[in-house]
Structures are given as structure tokens and as C-alpha cells.
Image (cartoon, rainbow, N blue to C red; front, side, top):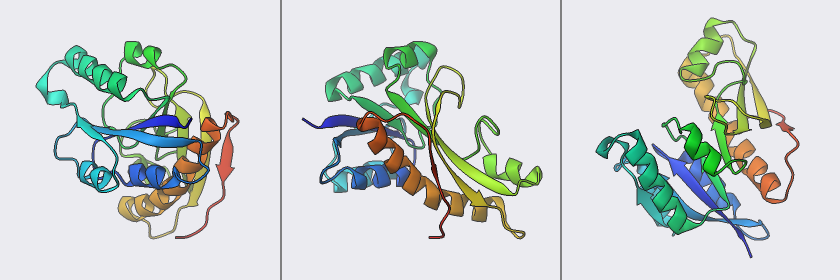
Length: 199
């Protein structure tokens, strides 16, 4: 029986699409739900077009406790074995994370533990970094923390802007996240490093 993966998004869902497209054939998992905290998220349409059930839990409709209670209810209906955060722009409480400990993963566009939070590419450029990195990690109550499960490095070019660097990093995100998710579903938690290759 296939493992079930719920994918949480807030925007266009490009990483969600990469994950969902990878879960075919002999992959040990299948997507069971794409959920967004934003009713108009473009990724919901993309998920529906792929035949994946969708749900919305609007974080603006209640306080944090109410939002997470509704989120828990939606996930309980979907019965996921794994929760993959893919551009989900909400910080989850320690209680929520504890309820799914060891089963929530996230992708972050930086070399963790450096550059937690937002504006990672601008901060990396301002610091004069020679490389940018995307990281898949297990989610813990601390922001952008938890055991690292995979990383991919991207060279910084002399004329890079935050936007051009982000675009190149995103290409590697779309390769790294499906690889790490499959490894997790196969019981492999050892960190993996994915070498850079242009799009």
C-alpha cells in the first residue's frame, strides 16, 4: 500500500508540482492532498488539474489556535504518512509539530543554519557568498531548523540579482525535494548532496 503525502502550499506550487509528478510508477508514495492557507493560491488549480484532492484553511479566518485546529482536521481526513511543506508561509506551533513529529519536511532556499527566514538570496549576495544552497530538512519547533536531509549548491555569478539567483536555486529545489522525499519514503534519512547542473 502506498504511503500518503499531504503537500502544504501558499502560492504557485512549483515545488508541489515537482513532488507530485515524481510520485508515479514504483515510487512508494502518492499525493493525497494539496492544502493551502490562501484561498487564491495558484497551486490549488494546478493540483486539481493533476487530479489531487485540494483543501483551503484560510489563516485569516481565525486566530492561530483556530487555524491549526482546522488544519489538523483537514489533515486527519486525508490521513497522510508525510507532510511536505512546499512554500507554505506559516510558522507552525510546537504543538502542531509535535503531533506530526518526524513526519514533516520542508524545503528552504538557503544553506541552513545560515539565512533562516526570508530574503535569503539577497542576504547571501550581500554577504558575498560564492554559493547559494537549498536545503530539505525535518521540521522542528524552531524556525528553519531540524535535521538536514538534503542540500544542493548553486554557484553565485558576478552579475546575479536576488531574482536571477532565486531562479537558478529553484531549478535545484525541483530536483532535490523529490529525491529526498523518495528516500524518506524508502526509510533513508541520511543526508544527500545533489551536485549542481544547469537547467
